[in-house]
Image (cartoon, rainbow, N blue to C red; front, side, top):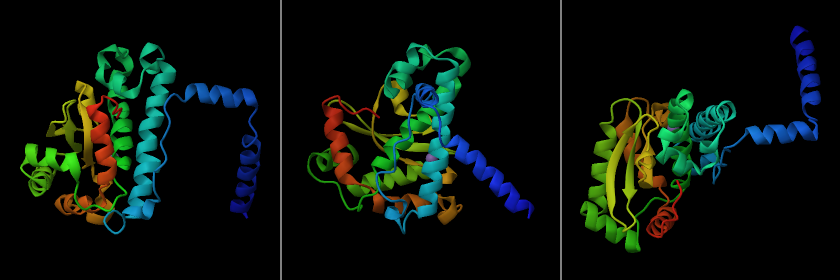
Length: 240
Ligand code: MN3
């Protein structure tokens, strides 16, 4: 009986909150500088390699959490920094006010990393083609070598972090890692693709077996999307 009454009260409150005034909507929007990109595919798209529950929790809670923190930082210490595109904010963290710089580094980095991450997955895996395949041959000695080196390097990241392949304006590729939610964008480098080795990315399905997750991840990579990112990077149009 108590729970029913409580539910009625909650429903009543929700109904009242469900009809905000126009002014309130406007005020909310002005506080929400950065927004969560929707997953570009259903959460079960990466099954069986990455389970739907992991995808949902990762997007709707982890990524959303970084965004909330970033928006809160923008609301409390607004200014010129918050008007710039995310990749410029991250490349110029010294211009972010001191009290929120670490918050913007961690959560702005998290926002950029995950926005890239959703985009480069949801594919059928397989192999890259065309110009990108040639660049991989040239810079890594072949696709299998890239996969092996990438997996080995990502397996060795101590604690939480990311493995990335960066791309220069002349199309040169390089493998690198960053701790936490740092990103090569913070050194004004472009990220072609990357993989998240925080435990939240794989623990439900793979538990402590990070190398198994790393190996399986290639089955959901979207090489068409990564080829688009490669072309965009070469013309200076790759954002995050
Ligand atoms: Mn993550």
